[in-house]
Amino acid sequence: MKVLLDACVIYPTVMREMILGVAEKGVFVPMWSERIIAEWLHAAARLGPDAQAQAAGEAALMASKWPEATVIYPPSLEARLWLPDPTDTHVLAAAIAGSTDGILTFNARDFPRNILAEEGVWRADPDGFLHGIWQAQPDLVEEVGRQVLDKARRLSTGTWEMRALLKKARLPRLAKALSQV
Image (cartoon, rainbow, N blue to C red; front, top):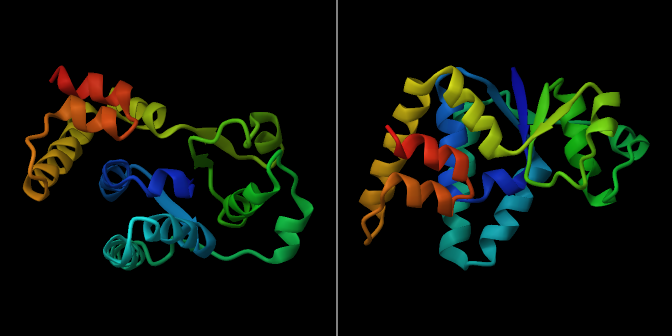
């Protein structure tokens, strides 16, 4: 299964690490476009040059782990598409050009399911997507969660617990599931 990651699910670090951690286990193949990565880097730049440099490094690591993940599409593809927010058509264009099965995004309003279905693409929010994978493969998702939690504890001055970390990362259902383990 190939899944296009919208910038809004790449940018929060913990969410990105959970999503890509599950992808590294072979559950799905993550995809993105140069424009999606540019949106992430632009958002990170608002936090300052250090954050921008860190995001650029993370983007380079992603590209090296998944060299086939960057989708290129002709401008004519984007031009023929319509979404409620025209600035999101590039995401759908990348999903179509990459032959992805779905788009992972928080932006449900601007990616109506009926329009996506016409293109053979579904939409999922990251919490529901990861929770569904946890239901099918709990040990795999729990292992990724432990790795992300360990990294957060190493890099942070505070002491994180699984539920709080994942809730802060906008993954409340997954947080509840993994905190009961």
